[in-house]
Length: 591
Image (cartoon, rainbow, N blue to C red; front, side, top):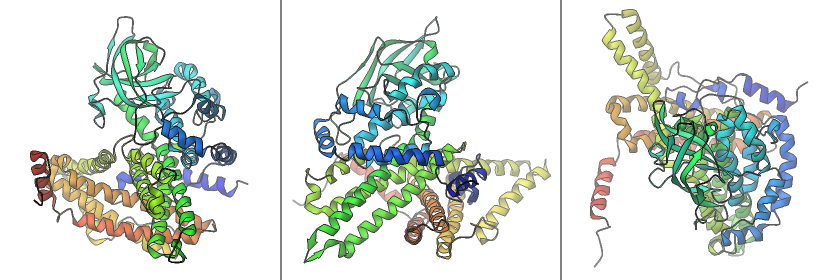
């Protein structure tokens, strides 16, 4: 008989609607319950492997805190430390066993990065930049020959990988890269240009490089480039605010000859390759953020119990307890969303990019809040370099910039959801024009649209969470059932008001995205709390309390965002920004 965990994995996987995006369906007022309940559990093989791996990582890193702190000061990881990471197999985490790797699932891989991040973000970055993005292109798009040639050496860490997309004029606007690859008569390519802020740039033996090719099939192509190829060089180690020990450099390509067999994926399809890598790799970043938050909660709780003021531990004071509770709520919520997305990837879902973006935005924002609050609990000690708080604060700041800024990702979340709604409206407009020529087709579309609008207006017939939930979770479920309709209504109204001009309405896009984030993350929290109750978990009651609190906080945020669609200060704010930009300064003084 299958174990409980194996049965849970099977149940969560078998019912999945793999072609459906939970997040995108929220914009239509629909909750895809099959993709949310029951909350997934990690496969048994990964759970067994992780038990040993987590212990080994803990034993390896727990006595190195003084070294890790010094390497942060020195902005350097010694070669012998990187060699130790190789020997532990940490560069082969997601590479198939057939090529010498451990073949962990995305969920298990994220859990490993959570463990390393509890000690030092630079360690996680060295490992994560290699696996999440550096060599992920070979794994996702490499042909059999490329995989056989590179994956075994990538698994051992003989080759460390780096991802080369960003340029001085192409950050969030990845499509504007200027690095160029020109086709040669023998089928090879000549690559020239410079990439900036490349993680692992100074230690990599393999670069995944994106260059403009301007072919009939597309404008960008991905290439596998060996670091020892003639014309490849990297700059000095960048002097960064945080994650200082990890290698970050420029990488230059001066007329580098790249053989035809090193094209990654299809010629001209590089943008698709880049986006797939970034979407697929976001669970690593999210896992790291969760690990960092858990470390902050441990530090903050110990500090609160040990430090006394007015003859009492500060842990007894309400405002300190509020901070610790909120850090725990945010960590539980981020963890719930990150591992739900990992489940989608591991289960072969075809459309999870919006969910991945949501998990990244939420987790990276949450760890920065946690770092702020933990430092505040530590008070003066938190500001001193001898304590870990200031470094964690510095290290976590990059997470809302990495792999797509949170501003860009919020716009992506909003526009991805609105795009599908807009397609429905386009169909409606076509139906109106065609209604007399093809009445059956025309009235069919109109009836479907009218039915959806009627359901939204009355609440009758809208998708509900029909499964049996713990009685305390029903109110939380009702919050999401209500606001998924609000999101659908707001999306419809915004598209009718602005049409294609919605692409320029970034204030409104942010509101729509934030509602979608609260809905998806909240539903993940609800699912996980429900699963913990069903499993009889020792802390299930506290998980239910988290689900209740999160739903109430989310409801207040969603209410404000929905109301601000119509009542806001956007024009005045925009006008003020325009004045400051024109002046180039803050123009007031008191003298």
